[in-house]
Structures are given as structure tokens and as C-alpha cells.
Image 1 (cartoon, helix red, strand yellow):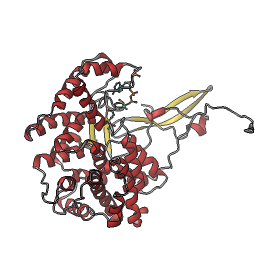
Image 2 (cartoon, protein in one colour):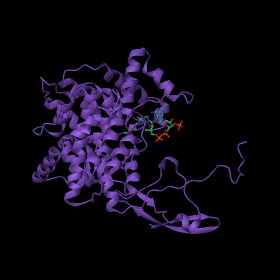
Image 3 (tube, helix red, strand yellow):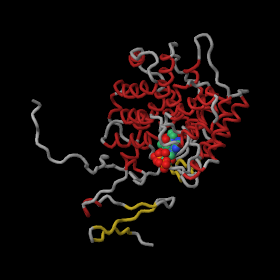
Image 4 (tube, protein in one colour):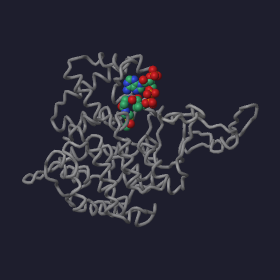
Length: 426
Ligand code: ACO
């Protein structure tokens, strides 16, 4: 098999190296295309553009495969905790008992936030979007830890900073919710696990500590594991682009939060629930919404459907769908939105428009119903996604530094006016 790709352009022939990844996926290395030929490639939305070599996460969209560091998502979802999964994503190996203990201890130690940082929460108007608060506060954390502005990507300082970030994102998220809903904040409890501690900070009342049932703790662990990484998605690419200027880890992930916020990405989990509620409350049938989604003159899209990479099924949505049934049964919850979601999915999967475009439920289609069962309010759904995605963002930021990646700087083809003479305003 040839290890060169040949391009014929302007009557000349040029060779480019071909590279095959460990899962047999292939690329043509065009990094010297412009210097050799004078051409650039055009790929809006980067659907065909590889931006890095990575050993963190593998996705096969045709077969519906997702692996973190070689471990199938199905196995991690069944057997691991989120903390263990975060360790795996950051360091490339599952932790030993000792390593997990040390990692969890660091996370526990960094859960409280500086009192002066706490005061900043009261500066936000009530009902400020929690994603805006999260992004702003992540940037602010670095002001209270100036040592994190220059973090090496290995060794003690990196370990400390990664744990600090995994821990602070959880505290900030819970505090943002408490403040926005006019409730006193709950300080972290070092005796609780990662998920139970978050739920305590969210839901404890001064005279009634919240104790998460094992079913709820497990459901939250699962949610976070399924969101922990997803290779070069919009928010992770953003973290890499920002980090490529050698911006610090905190501002890089704060940018990731902003990218995740959009309804075409992480914001879809809340949009799905809004859509299901609208279907329920309007009395219209799922088919009515399907027709709207297919109408090119209507901006409505079926939220939670379609994916840039998965063209068969999203393995995370299958796991979530099964889990949602179990959790609702265990918690004795009858959620009519689940019925609507199931009906919508069934109708959609038989529809020619969706079949021909390979549009299937994605991770966000059932995740909102799981979050509802856990008791998470709608405006926190995308924040929950951000907490889950943090290990992936940190690992990608670390990897780009380890690989000494060049600054990200795409090119363009200019289509505007050429030279014009200035006309004075009078
Ligand atoms: N509803 C209706 N039509 C859709 C949908 C949808 N949800 N998704 C894609 N299509 C159609 C497009 O209109 C397009 O049709 P056309 O070929 O006739 O023009 C075709 O399917 C291909 O869609 P693109 O938008 O080109 O696909 P792309 O890969 O750019 O977008 C995306 C993927 C953003 C996820 C898209 O499917 C979408 O908007 N889905 C709804 C939002 C959503 O659920 N986002 C969460 C994604 S998962 C995540 O980020 C964690």
C-alpha cells in the first residue's frame, strides 16, 4: 500500500505523507501543502480536518464506538467512578488504589474556595445564566492562585492544578446555583464522595442535610463519565485553540465553557427538555415537530438528534436510555417527558428524512431526563456537562503542550472588495 498521497494541480504532481492511526484511521499530512503548491484546503466547520494527533479518546462514528484511553465507554460506565475515569483520562492509566486515594484526597482538599472569591458571586444579578458565572469564575480562580498561571504539564504542580480545577469547578457550579436561587451556600464536606459532595452543596438546607441515595449518586457518576471526553468536539477544540497561544489552563477551560454553552453543542441537553415540554404542553403530536424539523424554511431542529461524528448511533445515548428507565423505576418517578421522548425517537427513526441523513439520538437526548430524575434544575444542565467534560479539557490542554503544538491559526480565502480609494466623509 502506498504511504504517499498524490495531488495533481496546475499540471504538476505533488506527494504528501499518509499516516495511519492505531485504530486504522487515515490522514494525509498536508502541513506543507501551501509551501509546496501555493494552495490551501477549504473545510468550513472542519468536518475533514485533523488538528492534532491524540492518544486520549477514540470515536468510531460509523460503528458507534467510544473509548477513553482504549477502554470502552460501556465498561467504564458499568464499573468505574467518575474520579477513576478522570484519572484515566488525565494520566492514561487506570489508577491503583493508592493513586486513586491520593488523587481523591487532592480533590477533597481543593474543594473550598477563597472567601474573597466567594464574594464575587454576589456581584452577579439574580438569574444570571450559570454558564456565564462558571466561565467568569473559572478565570477568576487563577487570580487567587497566581502560581497556576504557569503550570508545567507533568509532575507535582500539574497534579495539584488538575485536581484543583476538577474540584473547584464542582464547588463553583453548586455555589452559582445557590446564589442564583437566593439560597445560602453550602460549604463542601470532605467526608463525601465527588458526586455526593456536589449534591450536598446543591441541595442541603441549613437544618436538613441532603443525603444522596446510592441510586442518585450512581446516576450522577454515570452522567459525568459519559461526558468526560469526546475527542476534538467544539469545546475541546476551543480549549486547544486557546491553549495553543500558551494561555493558562484556567482561561483555556473558561473558553471551553463558553463554546459548550451553545444549543448545537452542550446547550442541547436543556433545549431537549424545553422541546419535550413544548410538545407535551402544546398538545401537538411528535409528527408535527418532525415536519417542522424537515421544513427548510423553519429554523426548528429536533434537539438531541444528529451528530457530526456518529452516523449510526451514539453509544452514550443507548447507555443513558437504559439507565433512565432503571433510575426512574428505582426512584419511583413517573416522568411523562420520557414517554414523549420515546415516542419521538420511535417516529423519527422510521422517517425517511432522518434515515437518509443518518440522524440518531445523541448524548443530549436522554441526559436531561436523567438530570431531572436526579433533581438538577434545567438552567444547570449544561453546567453539569461542563463538570463532566473537565477531565477531557485538561487532558487535551496537557497533550497539546506535551506535543509542543504550534499556535492554531487557520487561513481563509478572501472574497471581499479589493483595492478601493478612501472617500472623505463630507
Ligand atoms: N433536526 C433536523 N435536521 C437536522 C438535524 C436536526 N437535529 N441535524 C441535522 N439535520 C439535517 C441538516 O439540516 C442537514 O440537512 P440537509 O443535508 O438537507 O441540508 C443534514 O441533516 C446534515 O446536518 P448538518 O447540520 O450539516 O450536520 P452537522 O454535522 O454540521 O451538525 C449537529 C451536527 C450540530 C449536532 C446537528 O445535527 C444539530 O444541530 N443537532 C441538534 C442539536 C444537538 O442535538 N446538538 C448536540 C450534539 S451532541 C454534543 O454536542 C454533545
